[in-house]
Length: 247
Image 1 (cartoon, helix red, strand yellow):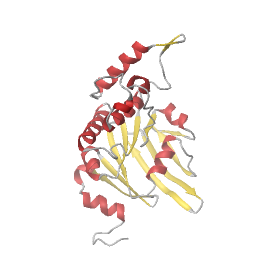
Image 2 (cartoon, rainbow, N blue to C red; image 1 turned 60 degrees about the vertical axis):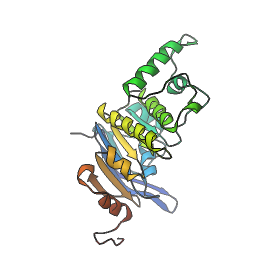
Image 3 (spheres, rainbow, N blue to C red; image 1 turned 90 degrees about the vertical axis):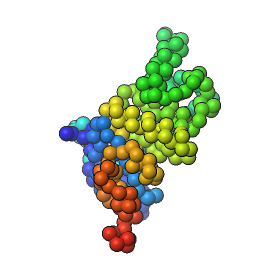
Image 4 (cartoon, helix red, strand yellow; image 1 turned 45 degrees about the vertical axis):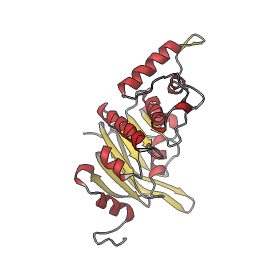
């Protein structure tokens, strides 16, 4: 089966710092791939390369088997790659409907199609089992988990093939985390390719199919989540060998 996304030998240097040193990544439709590693491992840089936020110095990217060049966010969006960054980029003074359609408002000539947008918002949130009592509530009134869900739902309006989630459960409580993890599972059920960046290995083990570990800008291991222990993943992250010594 051809992966939705295939990255080979991605490199990126910032002055004396080698952020990526030949990183590889494959992501298939209908699977959640967790991208993990310590601070400075290269996770964010790799995601920025895929999302078009930065251009790599070297390496290749193929999307659905076809070589592509991603040099700006519009290139990634045109392919069907959408990214939900940790800051969410929501307008807290606007309601849920307005945030979902921000930048892609439905218009009839010069008048906003408020009814159509509200109906579309309700249908989308219902399909994802996102529970928000009033879609006309300002985002500032929502819980952290609900805000994260709105940001993810907004990313789906363009009918993407791949979704990248940057630390989606950071700073969330137990109940809110469970809501977001449930939403990630539903993205997989919809057949999307999902990349999850997280430091929380419990979350990673609950929702991911595979775990890709980066260390110092390089691949340090790829694991099938169901058949891998947390200790093996931690050892790959830290560079420890079988005897617990750092390599």
